[in-house]
Amino acid sequence: MLEADRASAGLGIGLVDEGDGFAEVRMTVTGEMVNGHGTAHGGYVFLLADTAFACACNSHGPVTVAAGADITFVAPAWEGDELRAVARERVRHGRSGLYDVTVLRGEQVIAEFRGRSRTATPVKGTEATA
Image (cartoon, rainbow, N blue to C red; front, side, top):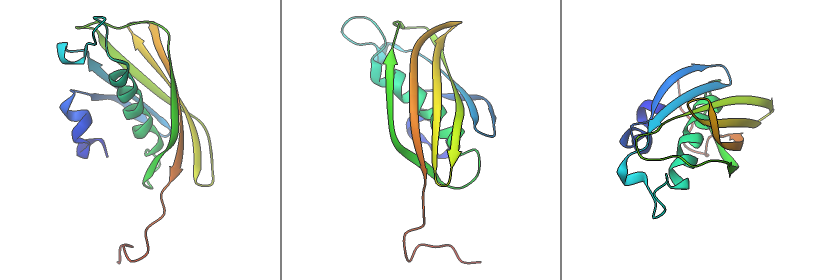
């Protein structure tokens, strides 16, 4: 899934580690990602966390999408900082899942993200045939 994600690739987001219900990605904050206060724009931090979330919730195989997500920013990041987002599955039941993602600069937490996933069902007429 990440190989086809042009948005994440365009920002230099790379996969560090993955497993069932788990993913770790990284990104370096560039000058284009800095806001008017001189810190990383929250949208880029959210996107990094969302990418880790997507990798973790798609690790089981079926196409899974975000049903919702929220983020709490606790510390800033600056140009040149390498950020890591570590996603862990909390629970998966039926087609729904809940994932927590921690965004770090080194060992310092800069944001906490919680994502809610939903396994997609094929749209009528688009099912693959064997």
